[in-house]
Length: 169
Image (cartoon, rainbow, N blue to C red; front, side):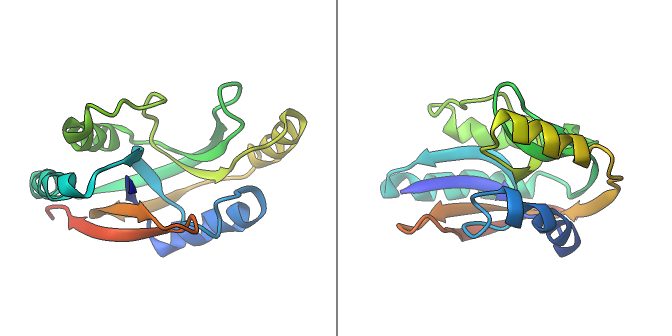
């Protein structure tokens, strides 16, 4: 089965992101807005308890923190993706590092950049136009990060939460 580890921001941030995602993100109906900690990966069901135990340990040793979204950005030319950039990346980077320790045999495709995707699969000209418009918008959002989630993909492509992991207060 295919799994991933993600953070879902507050409903306020999700509502803001979904204003754009419903128009620009082909995965809008498959998963709520998220910040990915570990790329999607295949995992044998027999290894699931080991992963869950590792993620529980990570959560128990990680303090909750606040995320600040401050601008729109893009991964162009690597990927035609537009995302909400996160100002304080260090806590995400540390959490990512701890999460992937258990999954090091499954290398990441891209370098880890904490972000919330709001659009993907743009043609080059469309990306340029949409991104140009979005860079003029003011972004000043915060969300408390107090948990992360192990999610899995159903046969219809929809992602569902397998288990949530509460961070320390």
